[in-house]
Image 1: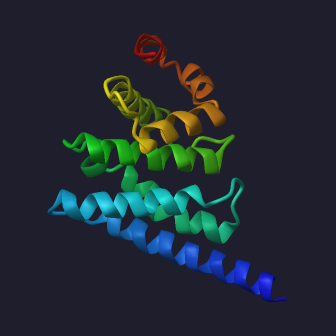
Image 2: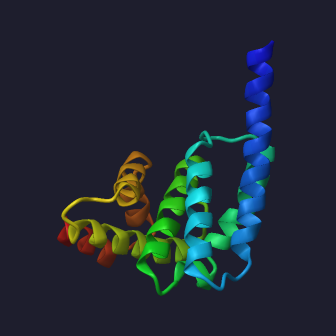
Image 3: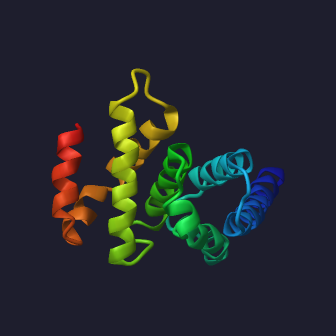
Length: 163
């Protein structure tokens, strides 16, 4: 009985945390020092969400899903922020798979962001865990097939040039 209660409690706390942190991402941040830890926390929370989540977990995902495709985050000037955003979005893609979490135009922009993160991997002598996790998650959910489906031909070519 105790194990079930603990698992249930953790699930509720994870949903609350995810929803609150996602809402925080929706608000503009004056400092990258505030934004990076928040993005990292959301990434870690998303990594612990199973595929085919419950309706209540899907609702908890919505603030993060909305925030991550805002211009403030998706087109942020700092590459570290972009990499964390790409990592969060690949986790959301994993959770929502086989469906895509965003429309085709947003997915094209997201794939551009993910490729930018991949480029960072190819220019770093010691790969960062976040960038490698993006690559791993993108491979698991077969993002390359989605890229073909929404006709991201130029991005497909670029992907192969990176690696």
